Image 1 (cartoon, rainbow, N blue to C red):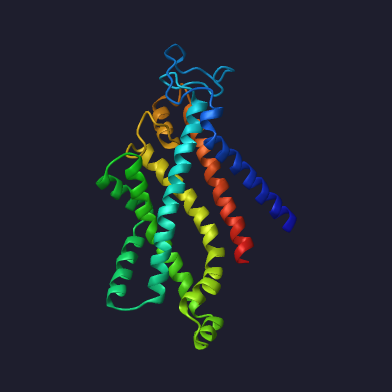
Image 2 (cartoon, rainbow, N blue to C red; image 1 turned 135 degrees about the vertical axis):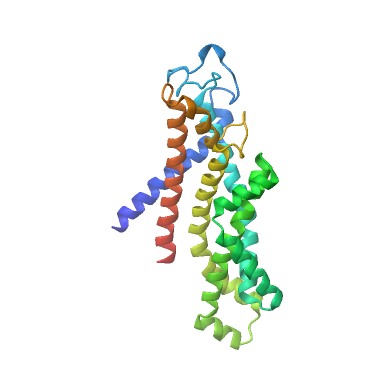
Length: 267
């Protein structure tokens, strides 16, 4: 069983690496520019010239899939770089400090956490506006309470462990306890959480782009590619099928990787 789980994990990582490398190397492996028009080849079916065919403006679908993955993965990475440290630091401070102001801050974060993340992201996007910068900020702000709640809960649990009480009784400084002990216990459950949130960020970005308040044309993202192809799905299904399939596979692989790592790191 253990060998089988390792096999699944390895396959998962390999497939994700292929998707990530395809996105990173898009400028080098894509046969065309993502916005290059071929007006004589509108809605071409998959051919040798166009691996997955073309869209309503004659743009190569395969090329736009690669660049769409580049956008989605970049946004997910940027959001985690912003939300993870801010949410984690605030969560740790909340779990280790007390007072009226800290209690009020906790209540505010709990209220934000009570909203579904996608609803909060939608609201913030509506306030901030559309485009790459606004989508980064809105999703990052909506995910900060998620990390806050998770790290706060973990820290409160670790604080009750007997070894923490012993170290505190021995007069060891809080900074040393955090660096040498608490951090080591926080990271294993946080790594699967980061990967899980990475996947949900891609879902949020795709959802916002699909409804028209995320990444705007002509920049491709998997979400707005699905939106573009939806009115033509009966006559020309390749655009919707290919972009939604790549999106679904990427999400499932990330969720699977998160689950496998959680079993290994927290078991």
